[in-house]
Image (cartoon, rainbow, N blue to C red; front, side, top):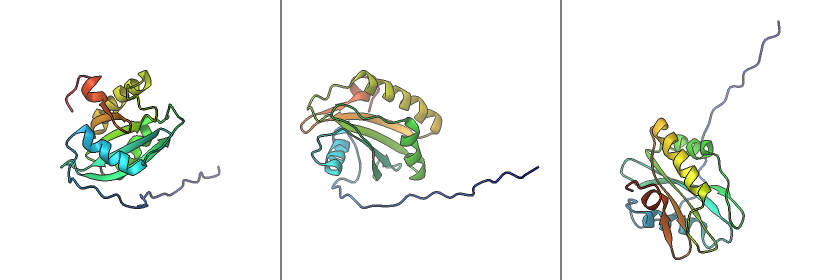
Length: 150
């Protein structure tokens, strides 16, 4: 019988830059939105952004998880938690921009938020919020649509 080969692997995150942020901690959806806006600029496509935080709610890592079309961005929860685990995140927030300016969450936004709440509880990583933002508005799905305190 021929033996089976098993790949030996190691994982590492690669830092591709830094982002300056005046506040030390994220204390509100607006704080997270400020970081995300600074990170993606004024884009005409939806960007799904992940912010990983330590136990003091200080942002430690930020990543663009997906760049979508004008009105949608698709992501699987495992992509979100892969980065969270590799960055040793205590907690996470995700957010995405709506280039149209309308920050009303879609049914898909609500659905993925519910899934992330369940998965984060199982993973032991706090999930603080899913934010939908535009150039001038911020909408916290956890605060306004899930009836959970942010």
